[in-house]
Length: 55
Image (cartoon, rainbow, N blue to C red; front, side, top):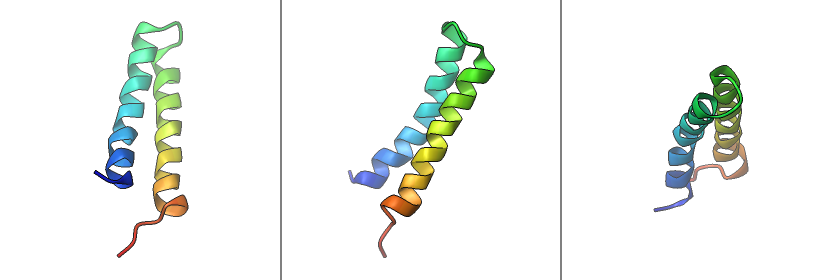
C-alpha cells in the first residue's frame, strides 16, 4: 500500500463521513456533504500537485 492508495480511500470516505455527520449531527446533511466534499477536493489537490504521481 502506498500514499496514493490511502489518498484514493480517503476521498470517498471524507464525503461519506460528512454525510454521516450531517445525518446524525447537529448540522444539516447539505453542510456535512459540503464539508466532506471540500476535504475530498483538498485530497485531490494533494494527490495531483503536492505528491504528483511518477511514471
